[in-house]
Length: 207
Image (cartoon, rainbow, N blue to C red; front, side, top):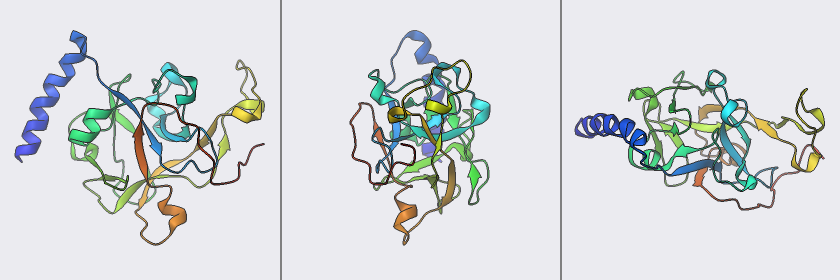
């Protein structure tokens, strides 16, 4: 109870500080294993950069750190809040990851931050992101990759070579896996703010 009271008071101060120009530390939430993308996989807000749409919730997307400007608006979360309070707040939109349904397969929405139980998470030592109200669940990247652009680019967006085609996967809360490494590898995350090219551990689907 004491910790929760501290969080409420501190949170009230924190919402005022950015208006006074106090900087926060942005971080991307990146899967530890790159799977099929040398850029890595990150937690991403649906749509693109400042045009992202909170209504669409969070998804898995290739990380944008390779663009050379640090965590982008749709992938930039407040590192201190994650580490100190378990609050996963996307800085540009000032909204928080929320547990929609305390059961496997839950959609991962982003909603107005309210200091509620559904927005309390723990990032464990091995990188799992676990909702405190359903500790048997882990934030999980989907198993299947779909293209988000490149030669299949929508109207109004310049097509790209498939070498750097945007890639997307679903993001859900699933039962934490203890035995199936093919699932567990998609449940381990890290906080990163600089680009590092990775060697894919899975074959790239789109060549």
